[in-house]
Length: 136
Image (cartoon, rainbow, N blue to C red):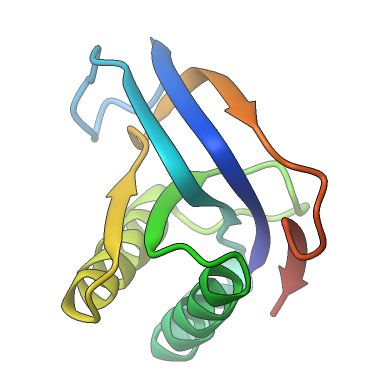
């Protein structure tokens, strides 16, 4: 899995193109403040160890959120960080499990529309730990 986390003082998205028919089409735009946005790329090899990947993803997100003093998390599928891709259903399943676990730990967690291209608007301060990349 590849994980790029960016702390954003402001983050917004607008769905533009629905790309995966197996997921519902979303047309609603959303805006968030004070959020850690996790750009996540599930790799094909991740499908061999789903629980381990889920735990590592959760641990890294919680660590970065703490470093940036936020409990607001946005999960965003960004399948452009590695050469291979996990299946969309596998990746979405991981997103849903991590979202549930974060909410159970008193984090606010949302997902951008899965299976869509989005217009993104973000403001990210130039401070230490506001941009973190992990590969696991």
